[in-house]
Figure 1 (spheres, rainbow, N blue to C red):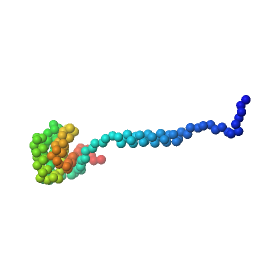
Figure 2: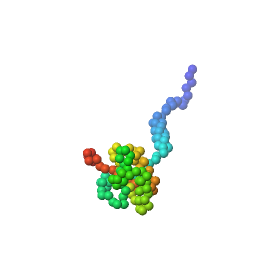
Figure 3: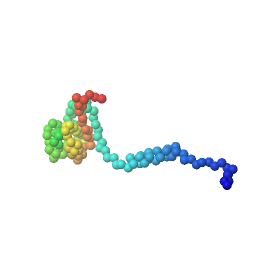
Figure 4: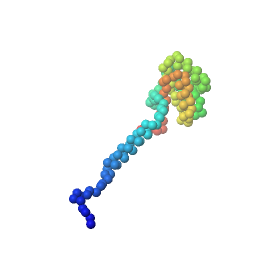
Length: 141
């Protein structure tokens, strides 16, 4: 014989919408924390526009060009790396704010560019810009 209670028995329900909200919150929190755990190493560069990079040369600006073989041209004259370091050091001592424009041929490797950039840093020069040239065959977007 079943004895029934005068109190109506409610069936238990599991509310799914608050559970989904909590799961999305936890997922977003873990994603944000994991993104903050990465070390980001950046290189500060002052990039000129293409029209400024092709403008007239000024005497107090150092223009360096890296070719595809990693050789460096200083004002259209081929120089060796020891010569480059001494020239850059002398120019930096004369003018402490001398800017350097670094450009490379299309076939130049990233490693060669970073090697030359390291020489510029060793000479004590702080103002370095990566000079870019507009490609005439591609229309501006």
